[in-house]
Amino acid sequence: MSLTSALPPIASVALALEALRSHWQLGRSLDPSVPSREPDCYPSLTVIRPIRGLDVEALQNIRAALDTGYPGTCETLFVLDDNREPALKLIRQAMREAHADGRTVDARVLFAGPPPAGRTGKLNAMIVGLQAAHGELVAFADSDIRPDREALRVLVSALLSAPDFGAAFAPVVVAPPPRTVGDAGYALLLNGLYSPAFQYVAHHNHGSMPFIMGQLMVFRREAIRAIGGLESADGQLVDDMYLGERITKAGYRNVVSAHAVPIIQHNLPLAEFLSIYVRWLTFSRSGLPGLAFKVISWLRGFVFWAGFALSAVALVEGAWITAALAACAPILTSASINLLHSRQSGTKLRLRYAWVGFALLMTAPLVLAWILTHREVTWRGRRYSLDAASRLATPAAHALRT
Image (cartoon, rainbow, N blue to C red; front, top):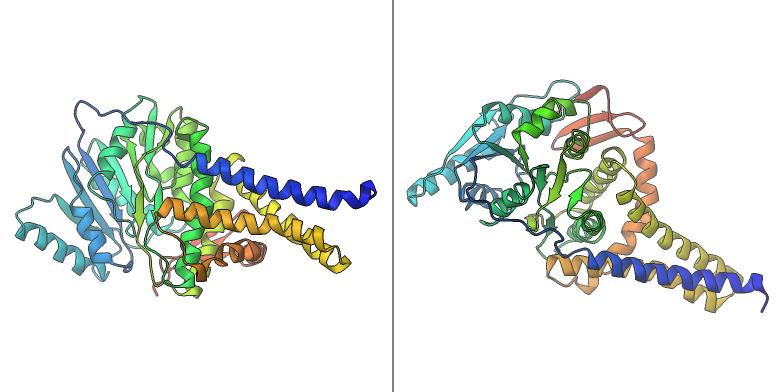
């Protein structure tokens, strides 16, 4: 066998070994790397929860938002567009239930109105909520998460563990077993691709991150002032990641909590998942600072596609052994996505959805091509025009109620 003919099998084995190495490395990073220290006393806290539309199991999410378990004083601000939001009735129902059970809850509803041009609806709600917040610390929570009664306590403990921590955020996990292909895609995208990559970065930076994933995040007020307020994220599509980047530039650090928070999502139609897939890849293009996080995803994608291409060429040429060796790379990479999801969620992926991780990587180039040619994203019923870098274009946003 000549050196030239030996190169494809050698490359195939190298790609398969890289897939295994990557899986081992990402798996090691899933364990919490920075223990939090219990503070002597917990400062007052305001939790701001923007809500638009109805999420899956919205009432249960709202009930959990009112039952925080936080050891200090805690107020909750639900921020809606207006009094036509369907969640308003559920918020009032959950508040009546809490009072009927004898629980004292400090909660209010605010109306933010439509966002001005150049600002996302979520950021606009965050700004309105911050203006009304009384707490020494300010947290922001997405409406599709359901934190347990430990989440806020652990999150605040992480923030207060060091004086230069300006913000802390909780890792998220899609916990319910997938019921549809859309559910499987959503769970694998978060649990198998995104979350392991950012936890790898956090693990190697002693818990610190150059950005924030903002499903549940808490800030020191002085850190918000240091970055020029939340308004400094005007013009950004991905406000949480951008705010985290500004936090680090202001001399603070972002820290990851050790307590994961579940995202509640099930019965997701395939078309809705594809819209989410487009949006998340768009967020990755415009929101992620630095290269560390991106390189992990790019490397996994390269291993997958290099192995797939090498296998296809070998099949055409009738080199069956090389084709089989090269096929190991995409198979192992997609299997890694499935296994990391199972470890994060605590549930095994059903065999009938085992192909979905493979499909995510196969379709990624098509999704990226769509993003580059269709500079627009729909998010919570609003359509945002984007520039070439997937940031808000000028005029930046067109609010459309669906």
